[in-house]
Image 1: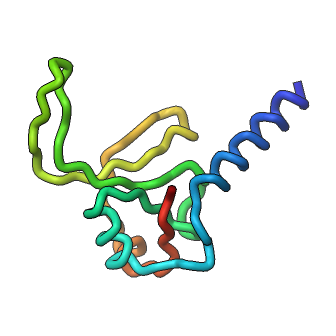
Image 2: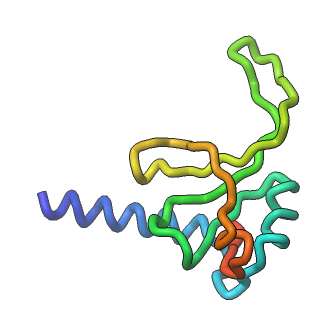
Length: 105
């Protein structure tokens, strides 16, 4: 049982390590927002608990029929480590003022 738990922790750590680019290259929210607008994913490196969390900006949805609809842009945050999948997200003042954002590959 302990082995399975440790293996799960190792897999989570390895997955997170693959996600993040060079952690020395931190940026402001304004810089992260430009990346979000370009379709990239970003993460706070210090301010969030939970290594799996990342934010992505969406401006369309795809229906089951395959039709793509343009919508008002919105942020989703990946909270799958908490068993929830994705959730709507709006930056807090702390997120906007933070300079610990990083690109997620």
